[in-house]
Image (cartoon, rainbow, N blue to C red; front, side, top):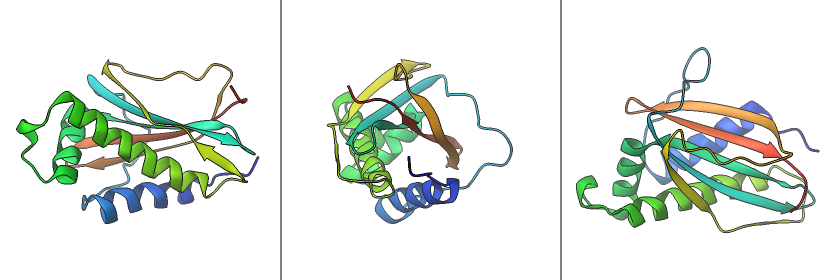
Amino acid sequence: MSEILARDLREVVETVWTVTLGFEVLDPLGSLPPPPEHTWCGCIHVIGAWNGLVRVSMSEALTRRAAAAMFGTAPELLSVDDLSDALGEIANMTGGSVKGLLPGPSQLSLPLVVRGEDATLRFPGGSLVREVAFQSGGSHIRVQVVEGRAA
């Protein structure tokens, strides 16, 4: 397995959030924050020479702000489907960039989005390779790369 360095994963997240969405992201100090009460989680599988997934988790408030930036509309006008579409695209952009750091060839799945209290996607048999967290506008973004066997 090609080692994914924390700095490489940080660069991926910073690029997606600052360049694509226009948000400032800050690297939090200390340990990773607990998941927000109403978490949204977007996930995309990488399948090929390397198998695993990339998970992006954040609060509903940050998901709503990111979706508003993507769709150019007021946050309160967005539907649950809009939020799911936006987070799915964020997971896709993040996963595509991570895929570029891994041995190929490989493909990305369609994104999967879940929400709820402590929303977490589990990958049975997978092991956490790298995890980074950021803050944006007072909310946390957590990105995890999990290696596992092909489905």
